[in-house]
Amino acid sequence: MKLFHASVILFFFSSCSFDTKSGIWKNENTPDNSIENIVFKDFQKITSSKKNFNQKISINQSFNFNINKPIQNNNWEDIFFSKNNNSLNFQYNGENKIIFKSKKLTKYTTGDYILFKNNNLFLTDEDGNIISFSINNSEIKKFNFYKKKYKKIKKILNFIIENNVIYVSDNIGYIYAYNYNENKIIWAKKYKIPFRSNIKLFSDKIVTSNQNNDFYVFEKKSGNLVKLIPSEETIINNSFINNISLSDDKIFFLNTYGSLYSIDQNSLKSDWFINFNKFSDLSLSSLFYGSNVINFKNKILLSSNQNFYFIDAVNGAVISKKKFSSFFKPIAVNEYVFLITKNNYLISMKLRNGDIIYSYDITQKVANYLNTNKKDLVIKDFMMVNNKLLIFLKNSFVVKFDIRGEIEEVFKLPSSLKTRPIIVNNSLMYLNKKNRFLIRN
Image (tube, rainbow, N blue to C red; front, top):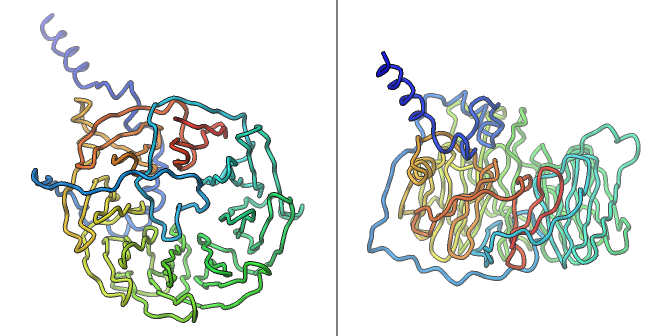
């Protein structure tokens, strides 16, 4: 009998793991509010019979990556960092020390993105505030464009910075330009349809889109409408948000119907378009989910419901199609592409033709590294720093992979991660769940 009890106790403790206490795995008793669950919930119901890509492909031991030295970034003026939406290989001190922590910046729920310029942090909240915070003197400034009749409406603000001006569009139908140095509105326009995309700037123009997939071109100085380009409208609004990416002379616009348009920046005419919504019952009510569009070295990288595509940016021809999809924008560096699939596979590919260099199950890698059972991970974001891949989990753990797909370190941020992190001045910056701004050296 004693032997039986001892066996039961031993089995119980052996089934418990280090990670139950560490908290790196998703809590099975907690409702799943992950990006994958929210963004893909409707799609999963439709395609539940489809199997996710789960192929492990080990890197050829003789293969060597040729990656340029990390760059030092001084500002973050676009929510997706650059005009083409691509991130870079950032330089990061990595000393894992909190060197700055602000007081609470707002009592309201904030947006998922922060911007940073000239030692000033910029963020928005659901009350409609544009909040700036000075690192130099810890001064907080708030500007609210909205009248009392909009008080009860939760605002979703899309924003971008150029010079001293913040350009904003919202879910009420306003678009406006705000000079934060002079604390004044330069111009404001109202349209009947909520805006639903990121904002891009080029030359003297602003481009954005609304929830009906209408593509707008405005003048920067006046806000006057230059051109309106209608595209396919969807009857049902899903979680996917229209996405815009710029090259030197083209605009790439992916709408919620699953159509990618190439628009010439000078003529503002469409060069070509291609649809990635491959449902057999394709209609205006079909659901499409994709990733942000990256354009890099005359190639467009994007994910649809089920596939990842390499597209020729000149003519729209499909160079390569892979049978996996992602809800995070990929990272293109030199001649390589790195991405995380929706079922948490870390994949590296050749930019030239889409050939897979390696494919590893992140959750299995973490389980092996921690010597525990494989469970679920909820990923919030990932980026490349110092030739390494940092994968940020929603529970504020960070998994650091080397460029060849092997884990070097798993650590937890000293304060919870709320917004998507950015790298500026060799430091990691983010807002925590208490709406405090942190800088980690």
